Image 1 (cartoon, helix red, strand yellow):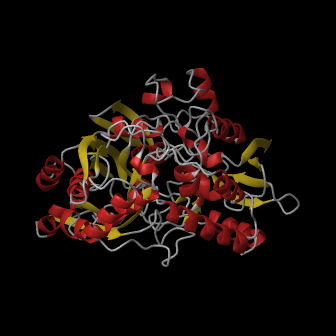
Image 2 (cartoon, one colour):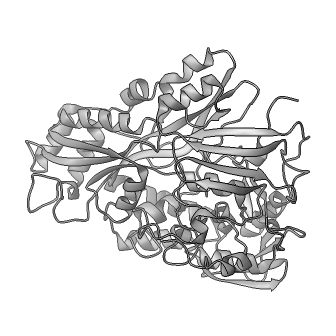
Image 3 (spheres, rainbow, N blue to C red):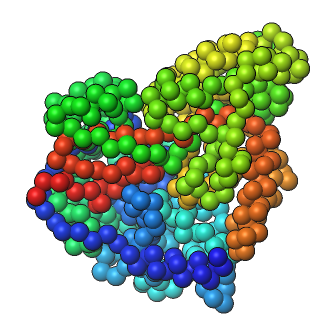
Amino acid sequence: MSAKHMAVAALLAGATFLTTVAVEARTLRWARAQEATTLDPHSGNTGPNHVMGHNIYEPLAIRGFDGKLVGALATEWRMLPNDPTTWEFKLRPNVKFHNGNAFTADDVVFSLKRAMQPAADMKSLLVSVEDVIKVDDLTVHVKTKGPNPLLVNNLTNLFIMDKEWSEANNATQVQDLKSKVENFATRNAMGTGPFQLVSREPDQRTVMRRNENYWGKDQVQNDISEIVYRPIPEAATRVAALLSGEVDWVQDLPPQDIERLRNSQGVRVNTGPENRPIFLGMNVGVPELRSSDVKGKNPFADVRVRQAVNTAINREAIQRVVMRGQSEPIGMIANRFVNGYAKELDTWPKTDVAAARKLLADAGYPNGFTTTLHCTNDRYVNDEGICQAVVGMLGQIGIRATLVAQSLRIHFPAIQRGEYDFYLLGWGIPTFDSHYVFNDLYRTKTQTTGTWNGTGYSNPELDKLIDSLNSEVDLTKRNATITEIWKRVQADNVYAPIHNQFIAYGMRAEWDIPVDQENTPKVRFISSRRS
């Protein structure tokens, strides 16, 4: 598809929005394992933060439960026919922030530039952007460093803040999560979304009230008058709360409870694949591992050791025993939702303990070595269980891994600081394009790229190929480059892909909430079945 045709398709998509009939208003009591680390919409690029943000704030374009791109604060977008380095966005008229301030181009310019600040974890999505320019109150031009036919794909989690409110409350600078210093936007919010913040008690509950002046109240589900969001880290407690009727919806059911809940009166379970590969990262960039008994060298720096790790992991056993069938084994950090995915590249070695031991011996580690595997215990489906299984599998080949399982609040910043030798990570791909994987996980770490590359992997030649994807408008050539990059990174093996996780939503029977492919459900698209 040419850039021109893509722009036309995007324009048509931008004019589409969900239409439904309103029914009786009610409260949605919503529980999830994870809490948002902040309400600052540009600070942390994580799923729990986006989940919260999508109900209070809005981006220019949004994805529905089916993954399709539709307009939110922008009604139209196109690449200018006489300048392929400029995208034009026509903004939705007559939109108000929750405080009554009018939404204009000034807010878009302010928000996108704010998201490009050094402390913003969202900046990697705007790496191709050179400038954001106000044309008039309802028109914005986004100037890119080269033609970027997929810019709109990068904007679905980039929320627009009220410029006046931010200036009045000293919130123009993004909260730096690494420093743990808060700003006014950490616990307060001012968006245009269908719900507005009422109260925020981190790790306890967040209450949001329906925005009665929402521009789209006649176009989206509007029978939910209030959201009470509760983080409940313990799986058993979440399930008990659902069964007792204390909560209406549990976003992340443990696989081991799915069948029991399906057979429970008054409960409904919906399941489906999430756009989120789960994998292990190995630090290849340090001269000596911090946690190993091998001194003076780094075992993970040898590709044969990394191949041994991949060969030792029994993905099918993890799928069957740990995930209870709620996963899909993978050999690449992508899935069928993502542009650039190729079945022929999505391969992994057959589990073979003897072959893995030989690879270690050939690399000079016949007796294996020690290391520490860092893992979350509150982020992904059965994340600690996956790591426990991996520890046992690696022990069979002589890699003696000590498991450290902890909260995502500790785990994620440490990965970004490059402090781990060996770690578990999951990667949602909101752009539905391979560049998002390459730019954040494989590209050399800089202020704006490689932001989640905790492996220390660096390949300048590969970096050039990754960067070229930002400006290649010939999609045939671009996809060929994507294939070439995948072949190279697959051979280098710095990650060990495990599976694409499935997710299960449990809810009281009067609700029927479909699984969101990104697992960042937007309550505006949800309605109870009760009429």
